[in-house]
Image (cartoon, rainbow, N blue to C red; front, side, top):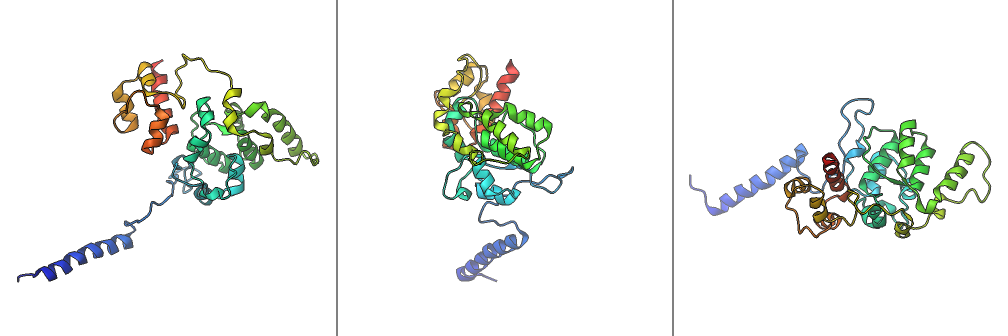
Length: 272
């Protein structure tokens, strides 16, 4: 039996659309990325979403919905003054708090991962993440912090212009049941200046210190001992001009600077 081009075209279209329909029915066909982290497979948290799988492409609205965290708490924790906090993507944090990254205290997607884990009490392996002072206050108010996690936070909270100490004292007094005065009710975030002015208030780091920051170039990473092949293994692609900064390259390529920085820093630390 000979098939004309007309019938052949019908058959081809049938295979294409039939395949799409079957894939949709089986759940294989997706026109959008499903922003859903992997779940814990064992332990007390089995079945719950894993905060470690939160990605920079997620919005704060996604995080709020997935982990049942009020947007108000997320907004306070990360000092978001946007009209619609839900629409802010996590990957924007690194750029908003660029001065903190330059000072060696990055606030980014990894900070959100840790905040979510500490807020919900879910398991999480810390790796030198930092949080803003308001985030610590929100977490302390939740009451889910173990002594170990509280101690970690005390060493990894960004203290802006040293105002967090009196804030901690005031909040402690209120939490112990003493009535708050009108002055005590002022939000912690109102006492904290914007992060753009932070870098000048931080202690200067040793210029010879082997520490990847926002202004670190690939040339410096090479000079510190890593080979081009090792760097490309972390990047998953060819290394750019050595004079380019690691942070700028990550932004241009859609990579998470926090993740790349941590992997490169781990490799550098192993050399010492």
